[in-house]
Length: 266
Image 1 (cartoon, one colour):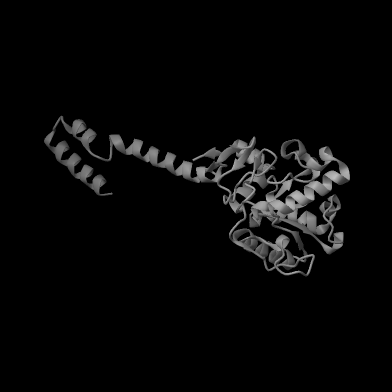
Image 2 (image 1 turned 180 degrees about the vertical axis):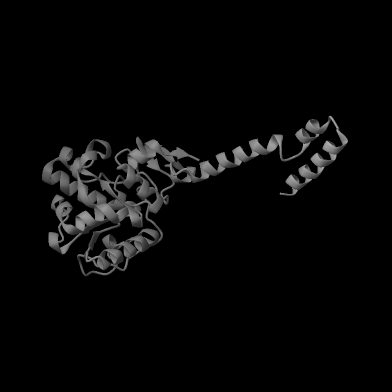
């Protein structure tokens, strides 16, 4: 505003004096030639910051090959892409595991599977509370799963159905999101607290699919994306990634793998 007043005053003086240098002077004023480019640059910078498909570099996997496996080095990253290609370290145990204040399908206190990382646990509490306010009764079934527990489950599944089918149904040790402390298997009384595909057809399962993103959770293994996740359909398995990312994935119908194929590193 000040420079506009200055321009008005200067222009009046030069018009009265008939000076032919007016245009040259205007070009030298600080709000003219450089002002437009600076403004555009600011808009570009702002656009980058606000671009929903831009993500800070710290949220991408930092990978190191260990014994032929791609092992995630920044394991505490809440956006860590954990799957059959990218594994968590055998020794990784989150240091902020807590038991969320929600209903569980079992009575034991602070057993391994009742735990989640604090941020995810608080988000789960909000989701369960909102569900209850809408007449939806949810039960947490299985959260954190240590590397040793993964080994036990995987070996048991191999003995039951063979290694090929076991790898489709149970994550190999280190490839389970449960070890991150960011995942929770959820069921309902209407489904007899089972973890099966039938949960998808319950009122509770449908509510979760349509509302989990509002609290930062994604349905991690959708039925139609098996060729992308390389896991069977699990309508009970929800993974915390934060509200912003979860909402983007929900709106685009993306898996976590697809999200990282689309997002740009800032």
